[in-house]
Length: 338
Image (cartoon, rainbow, N blue to C red; front, side, top):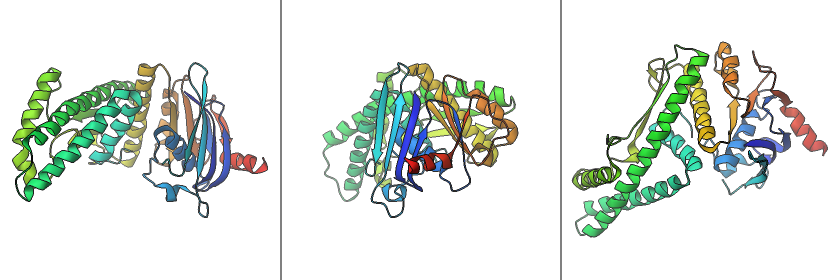
């Protein structure tokens, strides 16, 4: 996939701007506050339908404007072009929290596997209904046993599907992560591990579903006291470590940023291997927290088959020659002139 151009209207601090990327890897330069990160945010919003900052529409619209619009022109590996548009109402990140890490996996898998979307939707709906039953029984018995069984059957079956797909993707990313890190610094030793709390990865699917169904039934008294379902994919954990340190428990900001970049490059490689179509890779201001000695090595990890959009306040300490320079002010000026 190649991003040919992107137009922003009334988005964040951009009144009107057009970026002609032409499918190239580019280095977008500009001073702090000029809107470089907002450009990255716009591309992400076109891709997954939401801001990586978790912002809602009012925060995305430029002050004084009624709504925003983003238009992106993309070209697939067969040369077919499509336009993607996001407007005001159309609308995570490894910050150390379990929920945001699970969301990271879910967003990736929803893009990779169409079946995952249905499983996630069904699991979420069944979880909501079982939690409703738990709360209802705290105020007195009387719920239908058949209703419990129905929702728990869906939770068990879709829960196994979600966990197995998440585990498979983590295994792919883990292999890629280790290979990529070797090219940057052999001592980094990054790991990514998925822990679902059931340990049934080697069990046949039907047996795993039956076991989880039994566990859900046995957990009703405990879950009723708590008022919510305490086990399942919604409570799984993604363990992320580099240099022997968990990101949320002691890894430095520099190492955490390096890990985050390497993990996303590992995911990009998984996308290309599965879909035979390399995704667009976005890298926002890498030298703000990343050791300059790693910059060139990290940029060289992105194969020429992929398009990389990098933002920075100025020229990086090392930039491969294939990256076209694109001052962010020029995009806004060109739009104004038009």
